[in-house]
Length: 317
Image (cartoon, rainbow, N blue to C red; front, top):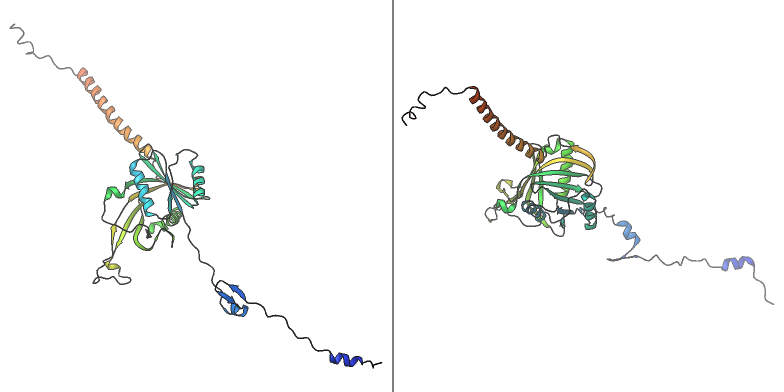
């Protein structure tokens, strides 16, 4: 029989275990394989910037006149990020209908042209679905077809928005300025827009009315007259059109309604103006009738004396 080994010998003969675990596999990306150490060394990319996805729905009410329809089409041609829809009946339930339309079209704002009595044009500027919304009376409308101005700019180019200093005075003007900026400001890198600026939208406040003008930025293109960066003295503005004036009536907290945030104390409706004109005309007619009655009363109270020569030729017969 063989001899038994001592316990100490068996302990010395046992080899030490090595760490034979496989190295961690690199991470696979679209650009190739990346090790974790390499990924840790690279700086983290900044968060994605805010992208403006503003879309505007433009529509009008039924029985709108041709001049106001042409104004709406002019605005549609100026805003490449807008969507035009069919006419909507101007009833008391138009708010719910338009809110549903805005949601179906995937828009965030709405411009609704409402015509009443074939004479008066009202413009609703709405941020949907939570508001706010503004109701304007549109005056002094001049379309591009009427004006025939010499200015011209590329369709779909992005405009520069300019506002007069009056917009920073009161709170309601600041709100209107922000809404006009969001609606008329074309988003950067929009698929239908051109990536440069060649015209200006000017909004100015005169007599508590917002006046809109559209100007082309005209730059000389001759090689001898090349404009250096910042050479504004050689640039000129040429008006393109259209022209219109916005008289704010009310600002609501919701979309097409809600609590009233602001009401214009100087607003007078066109119906009241027409009624005053009719009263003035009726007053002229009443004055004429009163003058006739006064003349008759005067003739009756002051009769003429009989003429002694009235019957002179009758006696000879």
